[in-house]
Length: 129
Length: 129
DNA sequence: TCTCTAATTTGACAGATATCTATGTACGAG
DNA sequence: CTCGTACATAGATATCTGTCAAATTAGAGA
View 1 (cartoon, rainbow over the protein chains, first blue to last red):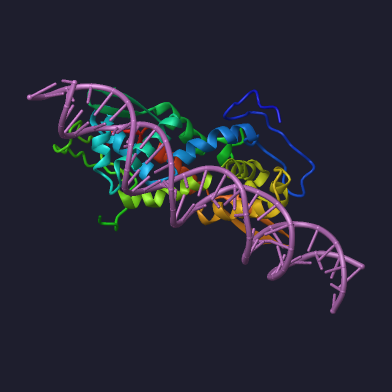
View 2: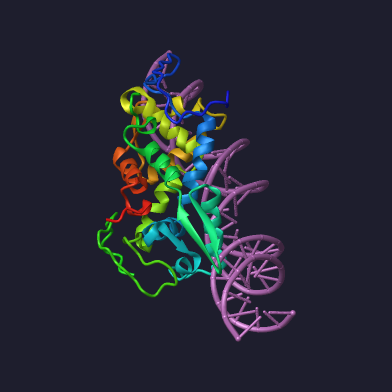
């Protein structure tokens, strides 16, 4: 239950002999890591937010203003605003006001981290080290 | 709104001149694609399910029985069973009964697809093609 | 068949979430 | 300063989700 260090991928190969079945061949996510990572995936676990992310990424310059995003959906502006806030609070996007408009862009580091966790070379996919 | 073809990454570079801001430099996810992909991320958007996935992947042979998984949490067996069902219905894991025990293993294809979507070379991260 | 264990299903319930309308705030143009 | 537009916040509500207790199914062994 120690929660201080949070490596994304552990290296130690550990074998436990108490289970009824197979022993471990790599270190699984601990509770603290899972608690930290789950909100990132929860943020993109919505069709509107997936499309928002994609719309932002596909705009020239890698950024888009809210007016561009709102017209792409059959949803009210407050709803889009809500979804953008969820993405921003998760750290997936950032924003800046320029005059009348507010521009959003993607934080590629967080996305890359999520991608790495799901990649075949990570502990989550069963890589031995 | 055509929903028949679902390529994960489109290649067409398209420029729209109606927006108040920047034009598109790649094809964003359409509604059908987003609707198909969101449930995959929803399935792993929970700390318990992330750990379940990781525990299964880290077991020797790439599979684990439910008894191994249940003891790793302070949760009841029905709750673990529920989370395993969510993961299975999303296609992330598969299972088989062998005598008394039920074994689960990961479907690496689905995980790889999700990883690819989040990778820096995909449309969601803003890759131009 | 009877019983024990492994796992799932059902039903209930508290808490989270997506959406809307109404309101508020920030900025630019007259 | 006032007005209009862009965006965010607040509050309300219907739906979804995670959890548990209780009941059910499935297999092993006596």
